[in-house]
Amino acid sequence: MEKGKQNKLKGGKTNIELYVQLGIIILLAVVIAFNTGKIYSSSGSGLATGIGIVSASEIIPKGVPAVYGTELGVSYDDVLPDNPRLADATITKLAQSEDLDLTTEQMARYIKIGSAISCEYCCGAQAIIFSNGERACGCAHSYAMRGLAKYLLINHPEMSDLDILNELGKWKVLFFPGIHEEKAQALEANGVDSTNYINLASNLYRGIENGQGSSGEMVGGC
Image (tube, rainbow, N blue to C red; front, side, top):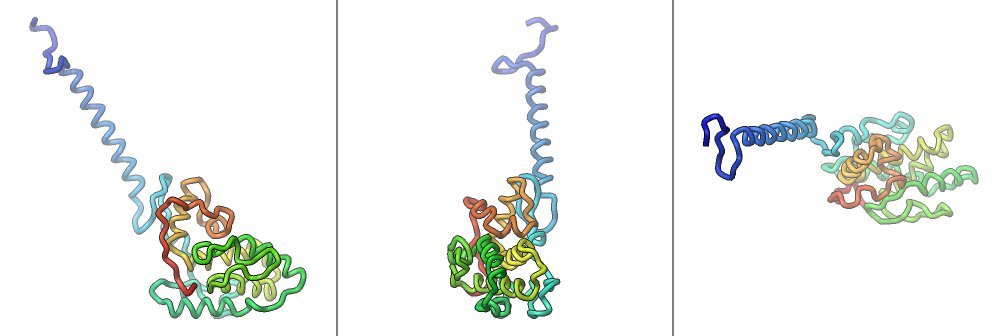
């Protein structure tokens, strides 16, 4: 071979071809490392969604409910996995109004609200009430949500149906925190705001978390 020609390696590849291939490999490695860093760069616990991180702190409500918390003596902070006695006591407080009678107008609103949310991770019912307003699930979580709905309809009729449903959703997230973190991941992956409790906890996106390896963690008696 003449001196002016490129040296060839085994397999017939030239030095230049080898350098080009190595450059491409290095470039791909840098891109992969950069994207991985973007996904896991957030501090604290969270869930990778492919478009960001859903932190537990973003979906778990905290503090005393503004409208009714002091009246009922309840706080979102009282429903904790490591204090089941306090969680059960809070659930009991929320359920106090569950057996109260409603006016015709209140019952119509109650059916609309109660039909939009379920306790599917505990009793598996389609909603916490039937279409006639009767109980559809006998678990403590459903009693709490029904009781709170009736309390707000009777004592705070100025709250809209969506406002009340939003409050029920907050407590449902507290009752089942693990599965709702995973549902938040699924929602964000589909471009849905997971910090909206109607999106996260009502029947609107029920089942979207299926196949996510859902956790069975539950707080409070069922």
